[in-house]
Length: 530
Image (cartoon, rainbow, N blue to C red; front, side, top):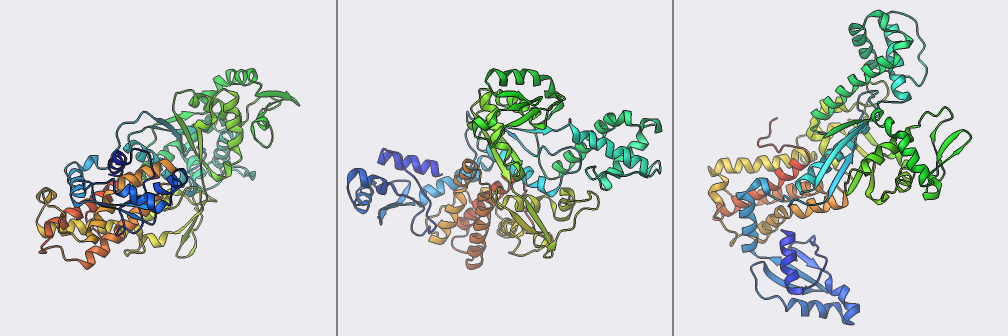
């Protein structure tokens, strides 16, 4: 809708401008501060310029009024235009706010948790944000592929195998063992050990088979990780192996060398990242010529950046902040435009239950499992709350609040609005098809503002994607639900003179709620069950 309005205004103004949506819809549905930007050029008062611009607009299908107010040009949309947009949306609900196919392509790498244990609640934030960003991008018409980079090589995988081996010796072979501090602990390691003991002969559990045991345990962990992601509604297009990139290490190092990106010192190979803005140079190969984690990561990113995407996005934990300059430096040495590599940092999460810190998982040993929180509050509540704040800000929430059946629980409150509308249609004994021909000629200003709010979803979605501020979608839903509940409580619908028109308005509200929740990976409830 906003794009249509913009084009209608541009035909008259014959220039580009900013189109805003004022908070007070009684004042205007849209406004532009164009007069202020023209004031210097024209050497005139913005108020006078706005008044002159307003005179250019004759009565049209799109606008009920165009007025100059304190230098702003204010636009109130016509009932006829709002009705046409509403009718079109209700006739083809699956296309509501959907974008045209676009040329720009993206590759998102997210989650990428080490397959050495179950997903914890910190992983959940980036996972839910990434999945929703993907859903939103595809809905708006972008080519958007997703990937999970599996760290299936290196010391952490060896330690997984060693940890399982020690657990087998302790719990299955009943031997005394000492667990060094850095080894993996928790009930999940014991479970892996018991399953391994059932699958392999006793003779298998020796030092020589640690790598084989590690590979087996890693595969088991990946199955568990995928299960948790699936239960949260998270879909990832492809899983790629760190180990598979080792064959390209030599070629990558040669590329870096050709571009003066690496050098040898103290028997190690260093990335000259300080010349590209990093605080210091970084080791790529150790003295024994084994690659650091950075080495494999550079090879992987070299592959990603060469696949032809317009933008590669990574979602990393906030503790990876210092990793950004060295990775961008490596890409620049390899001849890529590092601005096409975008990093989103997911900040920490603090979980409470009844006001107290949420207990650490006995199964995991020292962190809160994503699966346990998922089992307690469900996928819908988990997804909503993790999207309710900007990804790079700290998030704290109390799981008990998300079980309440009142307005303090936003998931309940929004679903209740959708269910209420279904209930009203059931009482009216009418379907959406029955009220398509209704118009809005007699609706109040308050009803029209609610209609505008519902039809403005596309602008919210585009803004959320462009700024990658996904919290704008749940913010929109909370505001829309509040507007709807207020209107519902103050106005009679069934049996009123405007019953048909109000039902049509309610159908649009429900469609907006359903669409926005769907993009968030949440199915709107038709009925509230206690």
